[in-house]
Image 1 (cartoon, rainbow, N blue to C red):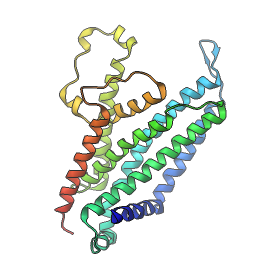
Image 2: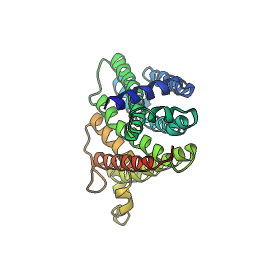
Image 3: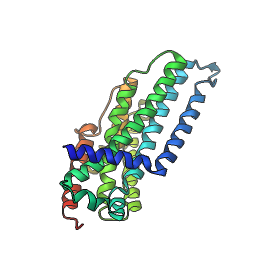
Image 4: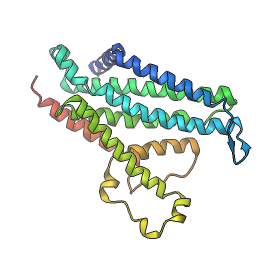
Length: 269
């Protein structure tokens, strides 16, 4: 495992040397500064002034979703050239010429990218958490726990991009992965809308058919994010099908990792 941790550390350092990493960091900081201004605004709802605590509550929830969704895009960008970059600059041969197993190299690269993306997302969520605390004097329970739950989404995105990049160009692999995420958000979003009581009251019972099998088995990226937000709101959670989204994403991560290792071991270097 010593080789795994070393390669993970090298991966984090390599990613932080990339100019694109700092571009994304600057965009994230700018976004947080924009969110910060929402805590000072005054809003009228039905002729009544919304107090700062309520405003901070909703602004923090919106910021949570935007950061989590933005990190899915960032994870895809960070992972789409993990192997091709090493192959082009000779790092792949350098690693494997030493007493390093292929699984250690692959999992080290994946692990380092995941740790960096998770830390990035956690820092942004923690910034929103502390801004809310400073502005209102109260804390949002479960906010940081929800951030850690969403890290499983990032791991799946990184694994899927890395796997697809073995068979297609890096950019196409990233776009295919983001398409999977978009389909998940669309499918799970429709399911969540249908659970709303106001929507149920306006639609006929014929429109509430059971989800098809592919929707039940499809990666539950959006539903996992919704489950994470439940730790903030304290509402009840209803899963699509018998499998919890945590188990769904964990199974897809394990499957993607297994297929990735199998195909990388067969790769000629």
